[in-house]
Length: 585
Image (tube, rainbow, N blue to C red; front, side):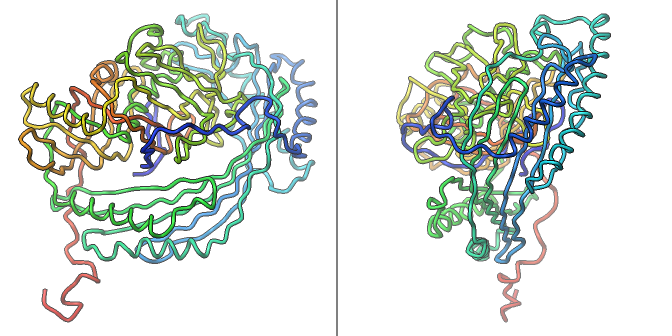
């Protein structure tokens, strides 16, 4: 399954399995703290941007309508990628790029060109930026800034005129009376330049080795291993006085295999490793051990029976529970969804109300770089609007307390808490970072399984479900669409009450609606597990993490998974063809 690709108000998440088997303190780098002492030398890019911004703000701040806010972001990215398939190298490449984005707001903090009017909205930015040279040429950079600023201002001024006209004939909801942009204190921070040095040849050999391993199984139709290293540095300057430079390096190894069941259903298994220190890359023994697990699970799933639609007790391992909360709760708690009348606004007026069992709390903490030994992909020191990343308690003992906020205010929540995020080239909105579920009603995972069996007996159901691994999921949040979610498990077992072994099954998708599903949680396990992935929504694909203990849910509904009707290959793979080996078929 591929990441991103989001249309309208649906959001899509693709996750990878990395589990934190023990509760351990989180690691918070100093750069995440405002005014941290570890300052580096500022890049000359900042001075060039600031100089050009001062020139342009001096002019556009006096035009009609006046520009009241301007900001510029340069994203400098170095990326290396090695991809292998079925024992051979597919590609090996490295590239360096820079992208410039300008934001011009006209009007005022209370009413500007981004304002939503009824079922419509402001036109937003005139463009999403442009690539710029990787050389530090001040003249070329200032010219690019000038072009982008002109484009942005023209679009913003046109949009504000339409908004002022539309307000006279469109009804404004209570939420839409909040200001359009929050007032925030400026920040000045110069972090060290993030970079990596890499010889791709060893990873080319590893890509061949890992995918060749899967040749031994005739059930595996295709295998892909992808290694990526990325150093991304961000430079931000705003008319409010912010000057920021910060960056980080991420490494990832992804394993993906495909098979097909006799009835035509596609069977996929996926796993990935994430790390930030090159010394902590997984060794061949660790990766090949995971290859063996993926192969065994795929071979089992191909032979496994299908599950009919079912509603009953289910236990989710920590990885599955983490995705469940990301989809069911996390997206609906993003601040901008409470303000937009086109959204379902599930939680807009539920602050102070009980939405979860009292033993559960939820925080979003992008200042966490690790949980135990596991990297958290949702870490960042500053968000994409220049606000310091903050730990936010969203739910306290079951009661909704807060939202993930960007600089788009809500009534009662007038400031950002550092969750304005975007994919390069898209305007930021409020998004999740590291969503962490905490529980005070914990039992061991073995005891939680016993509770599952007891609940199956109590309800008189033929079995319960144990959901062990998940590919990802998506949710619909737009008004006019069903306020529903769908989570896509990969490894599911039927659990019986008569001591029969668990039965591996396939063809299951978890479905439901948020306000009901969140109340069905009975208890949790005592080991937190982490899922890392990339989440696609209105502002593109952003790295996120979710962490949760295993959970017992009294009632969960599953439906049949979409399937292909193509038969498996008619011919056996060449390496597993008896006739090709001199025998008889």
